[in-house]
Image (cartoon, rainbow, N blue to C red; front, top):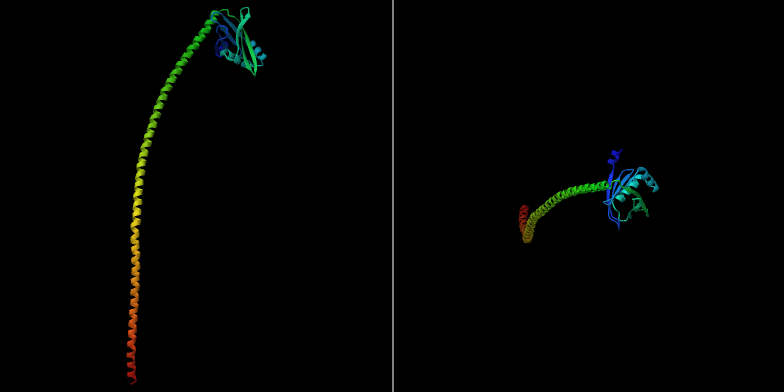
Length: 260
């Protein structure tokens, strides 16, 4: 049971600063159903071992589940809350009482736990200092890892930025080249269109005069052809008249001879 409880234990250490007193440290070891607290000012130490029965009784007084009670206590003894009032005062016979306040549903509440003098203050103080040193080492290692990770990300970000700038420049050059080519083709097409338009306008202006001349020539020819036809019609008529004049004389003579 102890090994399983130790495996699930959570540790906190709070440097508690109360106006009018010297700062002191509160170390907490938290389990699911109970917790242990130790306090030291560097010279003396006090301890509080909250058993399962005591925690269950306190939680029942506040109409809370045990887990919720322990979670709330860990929250206020793991970090000092500015809106909470902390006190560590004498409780008689070298005992101390640690208390803190908090707000719940608009009501100000206060929790208190009694501490007894530690039988071995040096050991408790050394344990808290060791925990703080280990925590500091872990934090330092974490800072080193974060710093290395940050530097790595910074290098990658610079590479990405450089690549982005290169791609942007290549894009600008490509667009400029394409635009220049397109502009050349467009100007060539415009010149070709102007040339075709000029040729078309020239063909219209030069093709209008010959058409008029051809129309006048056709009219003249039709006129001459008409007068020639009249002349040809008059000539046969004249011939007819002259022939008819000659024919009666000849026929008369013939008849007269026949009667004889």
